[in-house]
Length: 382
Ligand SMILES: *[C@@H]1O[C@H](CO)[C@@H](O)[C@H](O)[C@H]1NC(C)=O
Ligand SMILES: *[C@@H]1O[C@H](CO)[C@@H](O)[C@H](O)[C@H]1NC(C)=O
Ligand SMILES: *[C@@H]1O[C@H](CO)[C@@H](O)[C@H](O)[C@H]1NC(C)=O
Image (tube, rainbow, N blue to C red; front, side, top):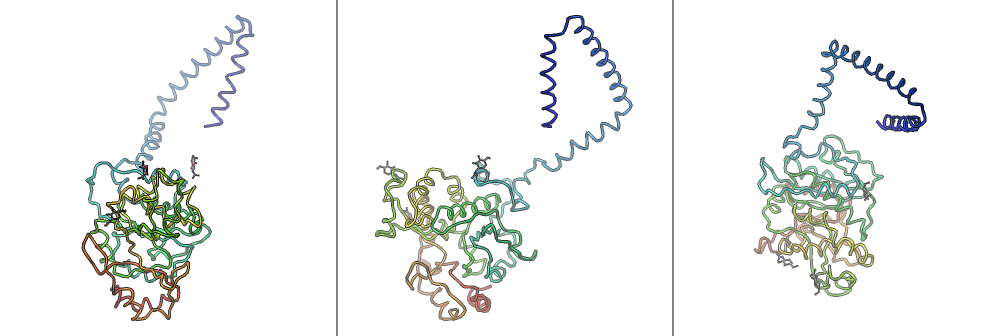
């Protein structure tokens, strides 16, 4: 196409400059010659058209119909999840596409709401066999997304629930905006499937604590989304606030919570469309302000406080002290350990007290897999 346009453009200029220079008689001769050639051409083409009409028309119709079949404008195109998670959109394009929201609230098709399990990892998923057991038999109620280091080459077999569930990823650093970007990228990719209604963020060190049925019911029947959001005084809470964030974020709005959230579709869209709070956190929350502990809890608490449970569904053990929570290995997985996780909690669920407060737990080392698989039927129910 481009080369044709170019040669046409090139042809124009010489003709125009010549015209002004040639004698009128010469010009007339040339014009007549062109006219003659033109008439001959049209007679020839009429002849061609008459005799080759059938042959010409058929390929034309076919080439017009084929793209119609590929891009037929049925509802199905908007309802079906993308056939592949790979795409060539950059973040700007992806977030724009993911921010599409239908304004008519009733779906004109049967929509089974799904839970999107989003794994934020470096690469391998050592606890994958436990998750495979968890998901088994619940096809159609969940979808899986994995964000790993771009250099990591996943090799799950086609029979695995993790097969080809990697999204286009970029390097993410703990405590930096690139970590929030990775979480937004997971949300945006999951939003492309219109059936995803709840979005859970997990890591390679996370395990499920209940069977799929309980997890699905707990989340789907909750009036609130689960994200830790507390107003914490002291150096690690309000102490990380920077007054340059005002007036978009005042000190009384400042919240802290672990990054492991479960949110509904509306809040997921709010997060990927945000352009008000993002630049404030990007510029003024840098280590020792760990942006992944503050950005989403603060922003959602300002925009939609009535939709938040203000607590996380992911159990974690900070009791050993230090900058990182405890990691549990083979030797830690005992009956006693599960008592600690399951007993002695109370929380509110739909404004009622409840003892089941956690659906997931972290952090578990690869060596914990074997005992976890053994205990799973008895303590997790799968
Ligand atoms: C994505 O591509 C568009 C169009 O080329 C460009 O305007 C935008 O800045 C790009 N975004 C990123 C994050 O690279
Ligand atoms: C922060 O405080 C200012 C001044 O009181 C107010 O105008 C602004 O709305 C507040 N911001 C939020 C997010 O509440
Ligand atoms: C969560 O905290 C917000 C204030 O940030 C409050 O408005 C909301 O009611 C709390 N949610 C619940 C379930 O108590």
